[in-house]
Length: 449
Image 1 (cartoon, rainbow, N blue to C red):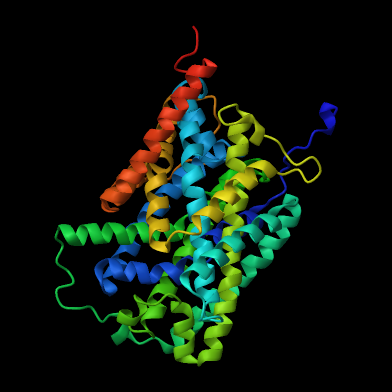
Image 2 (image 1 turned 90 degrees about the horizontal axis):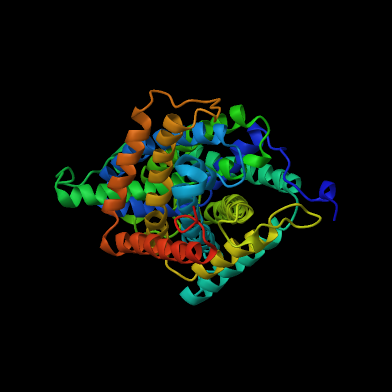
């Protein structure tokens, strides 16, 4: 095939499309399944202190992502940031590989959390479903997801915008209802001894913050599509900041709205708190209607997740850091179809785990090599790469990157020994795999002088 006829990625997504992809990914099923988990961490409304900590960390890290994404608008996002920040021929090569490696764990886990949550709301219609049937259904959602994404990016952008509108309608209905029916006595029914500030409290706050940050996962999603964004120096920072601020307003309103109608002791035990909320206000029919809207909203989220993550192994394969077989675009539809199948099949497998393990596992797998490492990459790019133009610069630098670094380390330390070991083990195994492959291929650090 002549070179001119080779399929390529095109810059077709503007601010509206980029923000809708980010927000659909970030809201999705998250607040409708994670709010009970947040309440359980400290057993009461005081658990919502995690919102202050989580929003601060997310906004600070979002500014880091905004500068990096505007400076390096290419397919792959954090993969490109690490490669260029640490050096494409030395440490950056290994860290870029490790990012792709952890994505093989964290990406499917994140998508699977949406699959599992979606099925929890399907159970509102079919309450007789057993746990195993729910797992099979979640895996089936993953199969259907791959099918819907097997098409051109222009078609996907239209679908994504429609799903985003559904998400706004869904959350808007809940928020307006909660404003009309909000009971402060329920929402602020803090149990005795709630503010004890001991080690147990700090660990619970850290785990609550991990759940809050799970709700923000995706503010960087637009960076994975960097090669498909119009005017990236302007579009990417706006999409990142707009989506974080918008999702903060939506999720905080939902969080307090739920416990202002459903007592928090009931809410933290619920698998479908959104349906319980609407059923309490309007009756069972409203709970079912909202469950249907949440299913669509959840699908919008996992749709955006797989769309973005499928570009990362593709970008790594293009650089020769990952298996080159995954670096091919579909010959007619011009999207990374092999990379899409890799991440999608991983999500199908991960759908057989529990929701709690999936959320904590994905946070453990990605904090060190994604959120912490990309902050260091920003510092290195500012120090060593004057050749990289930066259309957007972090406000109040270096304070936001330092807050992001310290905040994510605190959350990682709070996850519990099992998940800390999981995160370290996946990272360590990735180092071993990289070194073995690099030695065989005579790449850094085994390259000949």
